[in-house]
Each structure stands twice: as C-alpha cells, then as structure tokens.
Image 1 (cartoon, rainbow, N blue to C red):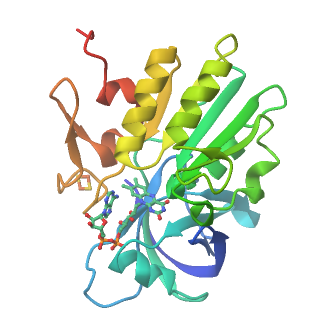
Image 2: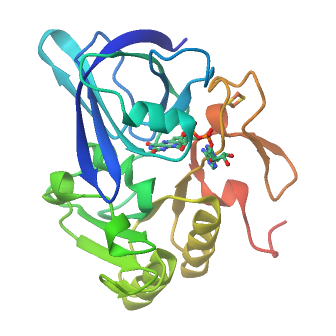
Image 3: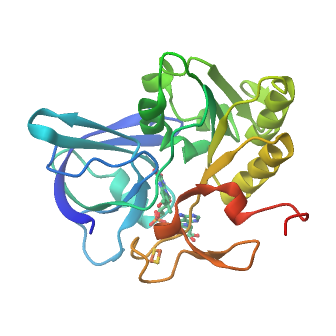
Length: 268
Ligand SMILES: Cc1cc2nc3c(=O)[nH]c(=O)nc-3n(C[C@H](O)[C@H](O)[C@H](O)COP(=O)(O)OP(=O)(O)OC[C@H]3O[C@@H](n4cnc5c(N)ncnc54)[C@H](O)[C@@H]3O)c2cc1C
Ligand code: FES
C-alpha cells in the first residue's frame, strides 16, 4: 500500500524552459523506481480538491536512510499554477510511489526521447541505468528553444550525447523530436539502441512508437492522463488498447511497452 506523507518543500527553482524544480525535504519513504509517480497536493483550500500526478524526476537516499524526492513541473492549469507559486517551507501531501516504472535496458545503449516536460522522469532513469559500458542519449524536443527544459544536471551521464529538436528550427534539429528520432535511427541502422524510452504528449508517443516498431527497436512509453486517485479506483485514467482491452494508466502503467497500447495492422 503506498504511503501518504506530509513533506516540507525544501527548494523551488527555475529548471529552464518554463519549468520548475521542486525539491522536498528528506523524509522516511520507500525509494521509488524511476518512472513511478506521486499524487501531490499543496496546502490549499478545496479547489482543486484532487491531488495531481507527477513523475519522480530524481531521488536520493540521504543520511538515516531518508529519501529526498525531486519533481519537475510545467504549469498547465490551476493545480500546477498553485504548486508553481509554492515556496520553501510549505508542506505537500504526497502519496506514492505509484504505478509501474521503467526497466533496465536489455543492452549497452539506450535512448531517451522527451517531448517538453516529458523529460521529467529521465534524470532518475539516467541515474538508475548509467553504467561505464553503456551509452545513454537524450533526444529532447519542444515547439521553440525557450521551451526546452534544462538537462545540464544529468548531462554528465549521457555519454551518447544530447540532441535538441525544435518545431520552429530555433535550436538544433528543425522538426519534431519524432522526426529527429526517425532520422537518428536511420543513421544508426547498423547499431540501433537496445531500448528507446519515450515520455511526452500522447500523440508524440504514439508516433515515436510507430517509428521504433518500423526500426525493430523496443520502445517503452510513460503514458499520461488526467488522474483522480492514482490507485486504480476512480477509473478516470483508463484508455483502450488496440486489442480493445482496458489499460488503467495509474496501475498497469504509466510505463509500458508501446506494443501493449498500439500495434501495426498486421498484429494478430
Ligand atoms: C503519471 C503522470 C506523471 C506526470 N508527471 C508530470 C511531471 O513530472 N511534471 C509535470 O509538469 N506534469 C506531469 N504530469 C502532468 C500533470 O499531472 C498535469 O499537468 C496536471 O495534473 C495538470 O493539473 P492542473 O490542475 O494544473 O490542470 P487542470 O486544470 O487539471 O487541467 C488543465 C488542462 O490540461 C488537461 N490535462 C490535465 N492533466 C493532463 C494529463 N495528465 N494529460 C493530458 N492532459 C491533461 C486537462 O484536461 C485540461 O484541459 C504527469 C501526469 C501523469 C498522469
Ligand atoms: S487515476 Fe483513478 S483509476 Fe487511475
């Protein structure tokens, strides 16, 4: 059973690209898996009533076996706006860790593909899968260069490098991050990555999954939907798979093999 904890916020800082980094004070928590998430609510009154889901962006075990959680946040609506105005010292109600996280890559190279704030779970994933013999790359895309979240704090572990894509061509590759993924897979056809991890808007992940399928590369996605409970009770996050079965994002995911959700027309 996931625990509900009341944890003071230690710092709130600019994370670049219009995103914020929220670092909680160390607390007695179960360490999460990268890709797992927490339902988070600040000390505001009734509106919004429900907590909001956030991937763990990073975590570290500090003295006395306490765990320090870090979240990356993009302001979307009322809940994220209130969290964005939170200051150090306020207490957050945090439920988790929840859901299914990322698995280790099967081989010695992996690419992470992020659409905007979809970068959020990748610092923790990088910490968990970095190894001297493993090449890790980040492909990050946004509409324009001012919307690219910062990645400097985990770039040192990205031995395969970072490539940026902007829809308007204002930085890096001109086009979507899925176009960049397709072009890079094409160039690496003799040495493809053992795993591609994707996090971003639903349509972007579906397109990235199709590109990976065509290239014969395994693809994990971290799915998103508005969530009420985060624990499989409210049914608010259920989507239909290509097999016409239900997939409850908060408990069956958010991380899953892309072929569970989407597949080509030739599948049985
Ligand atoms: C598993 C998971 C992990 C997430 N991790 C992060 C993270 O690390 N950092 C981060 O900034 N955000 C993350 N999100 C998204 C974040 O939860 C939403 O942006 C937030 O709930 C919006 O709340 P709000 O009150 O600000 O907006 P609301 O007022 O609730 O919604 C504003 C608009 O956004 C739409 N919307 C809300 N949530 C989602 C969603 N999840 N997917 C698609 N449309 C949505 C609503 O339908 C509405 O149109 C994650 C979502 C999930 C499901
Ligand atoms: S958020 Fe309630 S069932 Fe998934």
